[in-house]
Every structure is written in structure tokens, then in C-alpha cells.
Image (tube, rainbow, N blue to C red; front, side):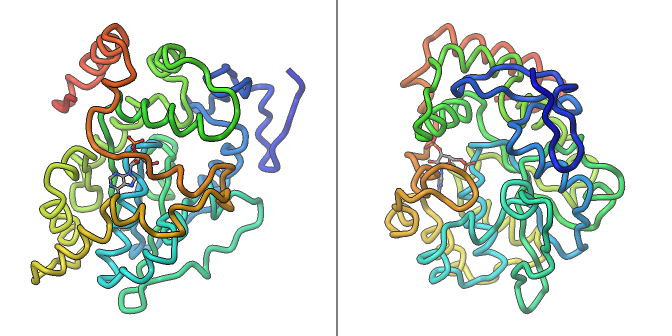
Length: 311
Ligand code: A3P
């Protein structure tokens, strides 16, 4: 492969590379995790330069596990009244991604990032695995982290549909399952990603909260209250919680023009509407064969059983 150097000095020719299931674009393995070249520069910028404030809130997730939903919820919980903002702004513009938006370019200035006036809170998102952060960044910071995860079969199914919206050729789901099981997926391996944040949430429960897409689906109200408490802004009025649940539901969000738009976002070559497909639980069953399901279930059991957390 031809040598190519990112502006941060990462020589990708020295990194292991693998084809995945989007077209012919390879992924590069950096410190045990797989990245697209276009994401790697932002990831390295974040790892080198991002210094969280104690008042920051970081939403961490593996792709397609409910990031967009949790962005709208966190923004609403922290700001309390978000209805208007959610009508005219895509959740990804309200809560920017560190590596995909803010640190995508070599020169960044995040000091102008919007804060909640009363508390000074800034809310960011990241897909960067916890293991990659050094002791001087979010590991030692007093910032709060909310990590969301989702059943791996639904997350992969969602990812596969998402990539197919990019207009490039997408490989068969069977190939996607095979690559996923080998960990070869952007920001993967999925299992290491989940376990990194899971471990930290057990060790520092006041700083890292672990939630699942399934919990949110099954009882959004209780989760919103739990998030409010964790973030230091508990609710005392039930209608406030109900309003947030409603204004962040996929049905409501899908109705807003900004989220219906087929224009490409400013940060990724995909339309705004690709972040809202159908939501819900178990859609993988409509696409995966029994063999694919068995294969993922076996790996999930093997990887997660020790952590006492099993899908
Ligand atoms: P499906 O593709 O299974 O429908 P992410 O935000 O991490 O990219 O995850 C995208 C997944 O979350 C998609 O799942 C999408 O439809 C779903 N989603 C987006 N907004 C949601 C919401 N408000 N409530 C529930 N699910 C939502």
C-alpha cells in the first residue's frame, strides 16, 4: 500500500489494515481498534488535545447504539426546555461529536462551544473507545460520561442499513456479520468497546453511567429521571419528564423538517434523515439468518459472561 500520512503524523502504511464491508475502503487498526482513515485524524486530535472540564458531559457510544436519541435526551435534560431547539436543529448539531465534528480538522477551537448558561455545561459525544484515552484526559477528569450500548445484532443491523444509505456498494449482511465477529468494524471491536466503558462505570459509578438502548425503550421515563440525577439536575415535576420523553421520541423527531432532510450533513457524507430509521428492538430478526444470529450470540456470551452483563 502507498504510504499516507495524516497531518497528525500517523503513518497509516505502518498500521494493520483490513477491508470491511463498505465498498473497498480499508479500516486501519490503531491501538487495537479499527478506524476509517477519515476518522483517524480526528480521533488522534482528540486523544492529543482534548482536555475536558469538570463540568463537561460526554456521551460515549459505539456507532448505531442510540447516540442520536441520547443526544436529544441529554440536551433536553440539561437545558430543561429543548422543544424549540429540537425542532430546528438536528441532535448531532446540538451535541457535536469530538472526533467527527469538532476535532475533524487539524486546527480546532472548541472554546466557543455552546454551554448551558446556568451551569456552564458543555455536552460532547464520542465513539472513541475508553481504552484509548490516556490518564491525562477523560480518565482523570471529573467530567461525567454517559455510555449507551445496544444489543450487538440490532446495532450491526442498524449499521448495515446506515452504510447502505451512503450510496456506495454495501457488501452482503453475511460478510458484515463475519467482519463484526472478527471485530473489524469502525471503532470496533464492539465487545472491547462496551467492556471498556462498562468496567469504568463499575469502578467510578458517580462519573460513568452505563445505559442500554433496551432500557431506554422499555422505560424511557425512568431512564430520563436516572439521567437527571446522575447529571446533578434531578426532576421534581413529572410533566417535565413526560415532555422530554415525548419531544425526543423517534416519532416526534422524525416529523421535524431538519431531521427529514435528505441533504448531506456537514460532517459526514450521509443525509440528515439517515439517523432515524425505525428504532425499536429486534429488527435484526428480519434480516439475519438463524446461523448469523447463533454466531453472534455465541460470541456475545463468550465475551460478556465474565462481566455479568449479557444480551
Ligand atoms: P435502527 O437503524 O435500528 O432503526 P445512532 O444514533 O447511534 O446512530 O443509532 C441509530 C439508531 O437509533 C437507529 O436504529 C435509529 O433509528 C435509532 N434512533 C434514532 N433516534 C431515535 C429515537 N429518538 N428513539 C429511538 N431510536 C432512535
